[in-house]
Image (tube, rainbow, N blue to C red):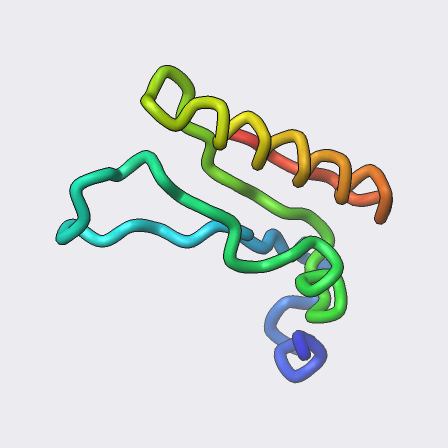
Length: 84
């Protein structure tokens, strides 16, 4: 899919964000769940993934599970991941 933009991307690495942002209409800004999978974005041409993990909130356990699942998938596919 990214091959259509190869002349613009050239040798730059492509980072795909797996989780979706929340709107200002929602009450919780710390519930960014993954809406894409590691293997999916690899098929699109990404070389690295990024996710948001919110520590200290009511859903910290869910965030840590998301981090662990994403890290495991990245290790399985041999790609880098970034957690902030």
